[in-house]
Length: 173
Image (cartoon, rainbow, N blue to C red; front, top):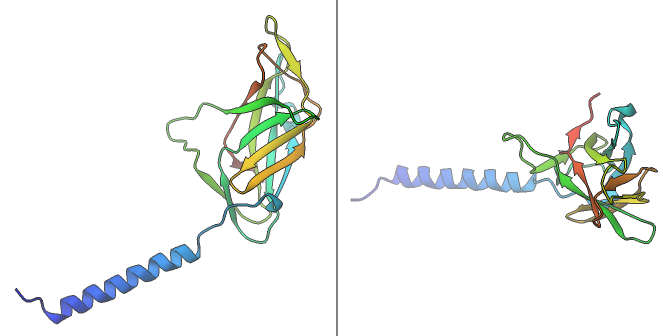
């Protein structure tokens, strides 16, 4: 059976349009954030994290570049001492079924934050406590190292300790 010429022409036009859409989407693809794009600091949450034997902080990220860029929604974070020894490692907080780690697109100068919770009192038999000097956030294009506020983390007598880490979320206005 011979197909009419209009069907072939329609198919050709549709293929060209689909190809153009894919090319436009590829052109608008958001690049990964470079370490130099990001500013990182910690906020204490005005006491919202503090309890009898626990504490925490917000790790706050700002995209200081002029363009959008993407980071993992759950950045890999660990805490080190002054000699670059890892003292504590972030572990993901329990996610609800509708939460997916994925990625977050950071608009220029927008603030994003993720929670960090840890045990701050030596409540463990034969436990240990550490006071990290630096936080290291690992991203696909490199690490961001930043001073960690004077805080104490405690846990079982294992090295390194762990702390709970939440997903990045926009900072409310």
